[in-house]
Amino acid sequence: MVTTSISHRDLKGLNSLANIDINQKHIYKNTSAISSEIIKYENEFKKPYVIGEYGFEWDWSKNFNDFSEGMDSDFKRGMWYGLFSPTPILPMSWWWEYFDNRGTDAYFNKIKTVSDQMLAAGKGDFKIITVDSSIPNIKTYGVQCGNKVFVYAYNPENTAQKVDFTIEGNLKSNFEVLAYDCESGIYKNVSFVSKAAVKQKISGWNQAKKSDVVFIFNAALK
Image (cartoon, rainbow, N blue to C red; front, side, top):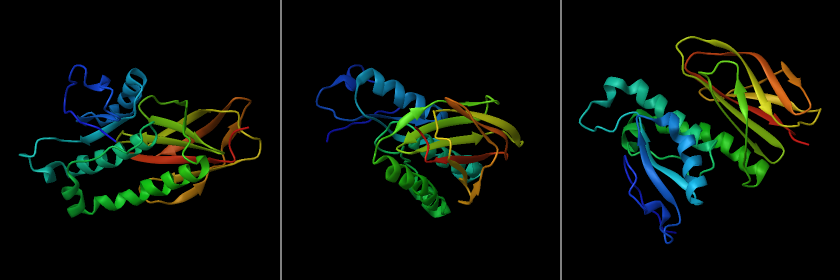
């Protein structure tokens, strides 16, 4: 397996080289673009695409502890964005020692909890589905893995939001929805789900400030 990596700009022709199996690049100060960049480059060059590095800050001359909350949040979000994108390797951080010293790398277990369920349900098969939010600033992603649908939602605002989510998919009439809190790792049942022919709706979800959640639809698609 052959790959290479670039930092802030593309090198002409590099992504098209026949002997490179996986294309990749670094993204700093733009973590929210991870998913769209992966999809764009995979569609254009027909190869797997990986974010080799990402981060809240690239300048190692700065004291990261001055903005540690931003560093931690960005580190966590980047992995979720990668998990819900068609990439063979989750986005990686150059600053692993910083996160190890802070204990933030223990968050890997939260990602693994959902990733393991995705792999078990879909046997490695992931299908991107459309998820719409009634509040545009709430970032959403969705994937179908076998008989389960997973929906990720992140509220970047400093206030809680009451939001509706519309999820693509013709679901079986008998299914349950769990909400996995990405920070605490606690599950709870979601009861306010309306079922339609081709779309399902979660209504009136209270999304806490600066929080994310994964909704898990069990026994999902017909």
